[in-house]
Every structure is written in structure tokens, then in C-alpha cells.
Image (cartoon, rainbow over the protein chains, first blue to last red):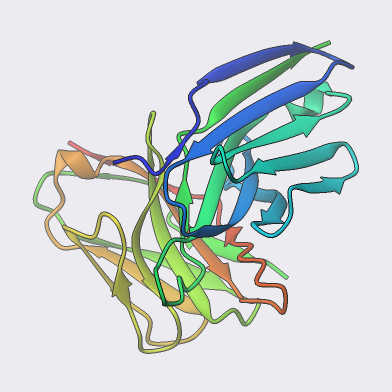
Length: 117
Length: 115
């Protein structure tokens, strides 16, 4: 049972355009969401996060939108750059009714983003 | 600061052999985690620890054991390796900040092949 899903295995975008990566979740107890970026042969690195009490968080070229009613979040990258080419993972935390999650994360499958010059 | 380091980077094992993966962090984080990454599966939590001397099971704990004897180290053991344990293993650490960021810091990974 995949509680966090990224249904697009890959996305190809032209440099300078917008990249939109999507993520859906099923567990309504999740209360914090994060995006990680991963280059080949490296560990994931934290990119941006959003609490369930917000619907938008922005950090430079990166914006995350959360739609709780649809259980959907998206990451927007504007403008996209070739250096953004990587695998992007969506992750969610919480999900334990009445207890702490100890920071445990549930990850999606990842989306490979390729930004063409 | 080295952040999170993992040893070794690569390893090939024969079925039935045992090995230990070492994770070390120098950020004084309380929480540490072991994940495995398989194609099309994302990262899945194997075991985690919320402090020195404590460990707990994650999503896919079978076939693995862990120990956290020192706060900075988290060891992942495979007692009898199986081909299904061929994967890339990531260690991570985190603190729970004032805003509950849950941001985890990852090591570079260990690529394990079991033949």
C-alpha cells in the first residue's frame, strides 16, 4: 500500500520554463511534507518543506503547494535550469494517530527531471 | 563538518554471508535512520533510532538488525545476506527542530550486491 505516490516517473522541460512535479498521498494524518533532490551516486538532499497548516511555501525558484482536500502537493521550479536535472522525491511525515512519528518519512517513488539547455 | 558518512561505499556479498554497514554523523542529531532504495520503490525505512541505546523497526525490517551504542553511530547488520537485499542503502539523521522540520540529512549511500 503506497501511501505517497509520484505517478510521473519522468519529466522533461526546456531551460527557463516551469517544471511542475506532482505528488499524491492517501494518509490524512500526514502533517508535514518535504521535497528532496537526488543526484546520481549521492544521497538525497533536502529542498523545501510545507506544514499541513499552510497551502504554499516559497524559497527562491522553488514553491511547494499543498491541497489537503485533494491530498495533493506539487513542486514548482521557475525558471528551470540544467543543474536542476535530478531525481525528486516527495516525502510525508506524521501519520500516527495520537503519537509522535519520530521524524519518520514515507517517500514517493521519485520523478526524474531533465532540463534541456 | 563531514555531515553523515557511510562505510563502505560498495560491497559484493555471496548469499549467506554477513556484513555490517556503518553510519556516522557529527551533527549531534538524536534521530538516525536506515533506508533502502530500489528501482521504482523510492526509499523505504528499514530501522530507526531515537537516541543512544534505542532502536525500532521501520517498514521493511526483516533480515536486518541495528545497533546504536554511541549517539553518533548507527550500524546496520545483515546476518545472512539474500539476493533480495541487493539495493542501495542510505543512512540519515535528524533533529526535531522548533518548527518540527523533520529535515533529514543523508549519507552518500552504500551500493550492496548479493550474488
